[in-house]
Amino acid sequence: MILIPKPQEIICREDCYECAFGTYIVCEEGVELLPARQLRDCIRRWAGLELPVVRGRSRRGDIVLELEDGLNEQEYRLEVQAEGIRVLGGDGAGLLYGVQTLCQMVEQKGALIPGVMVRDYPEIARRGYYLDQTRGRVLKLEELKQIADRLCRYKINEFQLYVEHTYLFRDLSEMWRDTTPLSAEEILDLDEYCMERHIELVPSLASFGHLYMLLSTKSHEELCELPDASAQPFSFWDRMRHHTVNVSDDRTLPFIKKMLEEYMALFRSERFNLCADETFDLGKGRSAKLAEEKGIHRIYVDYLKELCSFLKEQGKIPMFWGDVIAGEPMLAKELPEGTVCLTWGYAPDQREEESRRMAEAGVPQYLCPGVSGWNQWMNRISDSYQNIAKMCGYARKYHAAGILNTDWGDYGHINHPAHSVPGMIYGAAFSWNGKEIPKEELNRQISVLEYRDDSGRLTGLMEELADCSSFGWYDAVMLYECAALGEPGEESDIDKLMEPRRGEMKRAGQAAEKLRDLRRELKRTAVCMDSRKRGLMQELELTAEGMDIWNNVGMVLCRDDFRSFELAERLEKWFMAYKAVWRQAGKEGELAHIAEIVFWYADLLRGRKRSSRRSSCI
Image 1 (spheres, rainbow, N blue to C red):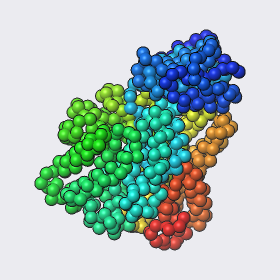
Image 2: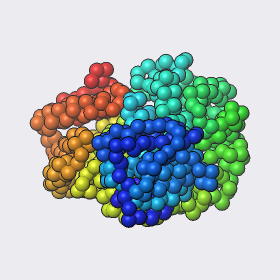
Image 3: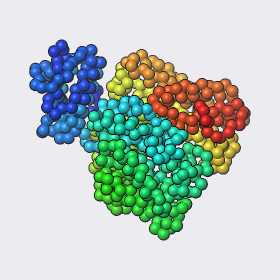
Image 4: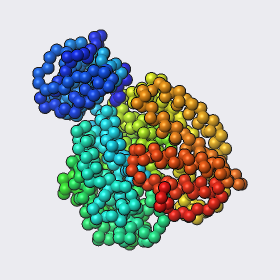
């Protein structure tokens, strides 16, 4: 029987519990109703039985949910025997987690549940998931709730949405007017939904670097470190590398504090993530004089300290990304007590140096791996497994306060949200229980439990799909921005720009053959899946088609004559389907930026020069 995350202790019994007519789900005193209702719905779906949910005294044969004083927070005990089932939790979260384990058993065994004794608890108290809601996709509220349901299912208890400009601030219409931001009502609704599932929805707002949409407005460009921000055309490269606030301007801190204050009011959480990462421009423009006097690290820490102190005054625990301060971790000790450093690292063979340094400096930290989806049509699942397993191991070794598994959306967030699910589950598995599970076995378990794939092959096929990209989205963006916009360099000759890619493109033929084989294997796997899970196949087929198209675009661009009307039409037809799938899960977001690049390539393939202006209608 597959259980994710793996329980700390499970003892199998010889008897079996049978759900039957007359079985009740009984909530004892103090027990919340949501876990009971989740269990009721699970039994209805997977066993076909309708069990009433009641309060009061239990009888022999009932399923009883109760709180137990002798258990710790988030701890639970599950007892399944012929006479009945008891789920005991040390608190509401523990009880909820016990029900999730029981539900996974019901999904696999139906109304005849094997006898077990489970004693379980998390090894890392804070287990989070971080979703980019800014640089491409802005998911609809219903989709965000589905993600929260999946986090609950796998016992993840923290959820953060990365926001730069995608909240509808009352007085910043110039910043969000060309986007589809989240409203206050949507965030309040999601906060309530997460709270019911013992998930803390933590606000995360860029407040230092990565403020492109704010600092490129005419109204607020004077707060930008580099001048003339509003005059620059949009580019993915520019948005990622620039747009840090000018810390030497007396107007900056009051302005940012006002944004923080407005945003934090929407959340119950006692935490607030200031971000403060990748301040590449700091000290290189308007604050250059101040940086010369005090040093880059000093002006960085002084500004961050002001924001952290402001949050402490509001009763919040500040959090910030640790990349800038990693070089001098002792500076973090100047920050208000309790401030949490988010120590990130996304390499498959991620080193532990930064984690060790922060621990030795006595700085509270979360360790932050990633699901490896940024700039990829399909998440690099193998990389994410290695990275997440290592970072969770470092978290135990250095007694980190938590894990925050990241799902970034650099350069448009082109990968479908469903592609991040294996990485999300890796984070849940390894932050709860540190016992090693080989990748192939965990992939099989995810295939069976999450995708209802009896063959156990789907996650492994998704992993293989990620290796079939020869001319990827990052390559496409960089070539477009160099040739059409002059970013990040001045080179504009496509033949010269493609020179570094020619070796890779020689292997594109092999990738095409592998893609054909994988698409067939995915179709064979679909018949092994529960019909309600087969919708994923459309997304995977679309992803494979897109990878093949872009690989062909790369090959054509390596020729002397790269006109191909047939490939241009294929690209446009694929993108029409891609937009439809995008809009099922998300708002419009930055789909127009992606469209501009797609259409530029389609026109290039027809030998037509296209303006680099953003499309006004897609």
